[in-house]
Image 1: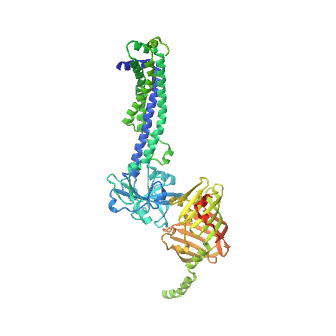
Image 2 (image 1 turned 30 degrees about the vertical axis):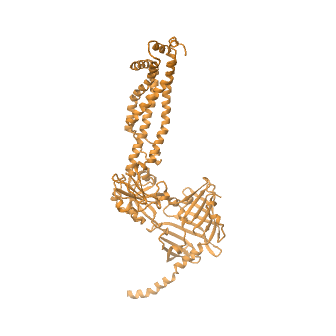
Image 3 (image 1 turned 90 degrees about the vertical axis):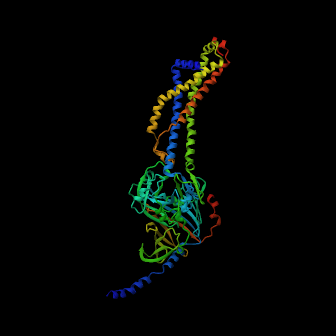
Length: 385
Length: 245
């Protein structure tokens, strides 16, 4: 076997540019596979961390009648949880309201949250330190769409528990920047005590955010949704992206493998005398098949080395500087940072190397099988078979 | 001396109080003018926007306060859109998508065809006398007509507006102007009613301007081109099946 690899190495090095073209194409597929998967993994990791830090905590205890995807459910999807069950939970109460910035009308969700909470990164301390009667904090996206700045007062209209309209000026006490669109767009965060007072629904919550110490327990009218469950949509999208991305790199890989396959077919056709000589010198047919297969699979090793030469600096640069997302991406409703920093795990790199080597070996072996059927005498004469 | 002044003024004050008629009676007369068992209205809604005005015409059928059906006739974009209100539920049929959707929650806060009227403004289901205690607080003249100024305070907990102020024509008992307030006292909406005409035994305003006071703009004019009261409307009109007809 050692001899096979030595011969394969010498033959490939002797082929010169042809070898490096094949290895180059394969290495490109290799680098793209790692980069694309690293990008998706980076997005996934960042989005999960942001989702947990800004919205999900350790999970949500949600009122049974509330469905976050159904705004109709907001009207009745709230209730009171016994005090003794509220340990390690931060209440969030949602009501609908209308905001009137610069004479325009915006439908918004008014979210009340405990100002002393630390379970999510929302800067609720700004609400506590504000002297305004109705302090609110909003996300950067909301501030941009409503053209609001810190200190601005804007008229808000809402309904109380009986459906009676009320209105007051709310003060923007802070603007936070987040990658999580569902704590930003169309939302105003305010002290939950104030929202209870405004609506007359004291003690009500739409959901509770659990901290790490929370142990789920049965409570009538409420259901616990773990952070994994809350992240399920993201997981689905990530998986879908990986599948759709695999089409691109399968195409690239196919081009690289096709080049190896063609080279192998050509080698076996042109090197019949060499094959005959190997057999005449005592090698079995399958040893010659092994030699040619080793030659083909060695392309993948060369591709790996070549890929490392230009891939490592390139991928390291991208991991350091990140990949800028278009401005419109934050309107997609997904947790998406302005820059995604790819993450290249050992499993990804080793897995990709194995895929490239195994597939290169297979496509090298397929044409080499022909050698096993060759007549050595005819091969020595260089006759076409 | 101050007792003397007080004694001199007392009869005047009493007379002034007695001069104002009973507000509840006025409100009852307003309700009598504005409500009917059934009505069929052909109307135009002129929506004044930043880029000009546009007119939406419609034909509406109503049975009391709780049941109504409206079909939009023009412009082409809105033609065929139908709206059905049954009690506190509202459905809209859109011919372009051939789908009927039920409006609820925040969608009821959206404006009707871009006007100053929201869907929830159309969901009010009771007479004024059932919802408000009224007091006459003054007398003013609007467009040459003498009006009683009534302040209405909700006597039911679930009234949309806790306070209203109405300017009621002293002869025709039709509101010529109305202001709707939030609990905080913030003025939310203003309505101006004009072109009051005699229709059968009642007076009715044929032009109503709705203005959301929190929004910029000139508001929305609701112009009645034809109205019939207490006519027989077939029951099938007020069914979901009629939305797709």
